[in-house]
Length: 221
Length: 221
Ligand SMILES: [Mg+2]
Ligand SMILES: [Mg+2]
Ligand SMILES: [Mg+2]
Image 1 (cartoon, rainbow over the protein chains, first blue to last red):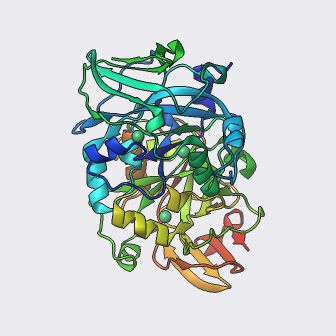
Image 2 (cartoon, rainbow over the protein chains, first blue to last red):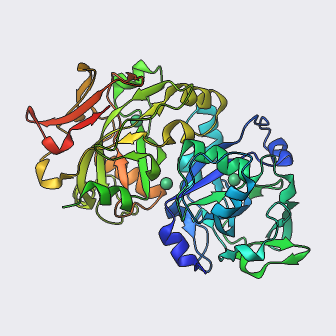
Image 3 (cartoon, rainbow over the protein chains, first blue to last red):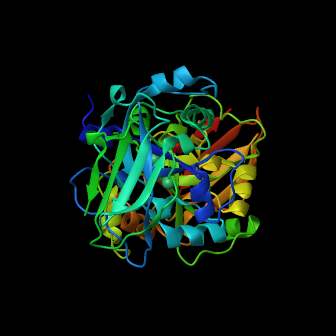
């Protein structure tokens, strides 16, 4: 079983899908995409469990986005979108992640047609949980993602609400760029994103059949 | 001395500066940035010398951008912009690179405020030269970058034309995200970017004091 230090050490790219839950698209006043779109976060942004707080850069309005993450177990290239078995076989396991976003930096980038890499890429902007063995998750499209700030529920939705499911995501990514063993894919965030400030405590988790999966727990001061 | 296979194997992120030469900004009708901006290419896009052609994805208008690349030799965090010595000490060596760009995909992304990761991230979209030892380059701000398509000169300019010099680039990047040993930084392209189609032959190189640095030669069918 992979330990989470080796996941950070072996991860070369983190590919994230944008706008993959309808209600989240509405809350950001974004257009509903006809096809999935993706962006990269650098692996240097990964924050391991217990490795301290998320650091808010000066002047940044920092938002949380809780997401189910996939840890790739093999090389994937040109996966067919209907190849559900191929997609699941390529996944080594899961993790929970918070795709921290400098929302004001991102809004500015969107307005100017500039890349998102800075807005998404600060050090500590990707808190992750421990590794979740594949056997622990029977159906990745039927999990409850939740996130609290100072113990108040902010996000809580089921992964069945994804607009584009995991095989389609892996297909679209792998037709552009090869996914390699150790790469991480973030599958999008449901509604409820919002700001956190220094000192706020974020907790997040993953429920299957109403029960928390312990390895998925994140707590970030 | 680093061999180029190990450079690809060890590279986790490729950080690229946009709009770093005034005449290139003009040719793309872009705004001149008040500060440098950056985007990520995935390390999976690296094309090693002799590893075959750049692959043009269907429907893509593919542009070349020749750039001086830095290979980082150590961890860099919060570098001061005036710390020229610190910047040079952090560089393990150089390479020449062609930042291939799906220009129509990028134009569409700019219009919609979407990320650039797809436009910049296709497999084979980062042909690189062999590793250039640091001792071979006396002054990285006084090199001639050139690129030909089917033996016709398309780009030829001196790195002294950079708007933001290397210490400033490394400072700005490292204040957002930690640069790690093995990471690659692309320092921007001069004017003359343009399309290539399947079958075109790109050659590129680097001159110091009017003489080609042999390790920098790229030839991509
Ligand atoms: Mg990367
Ligand atoms: Mg997200
Ligand atoms: Mg470029």
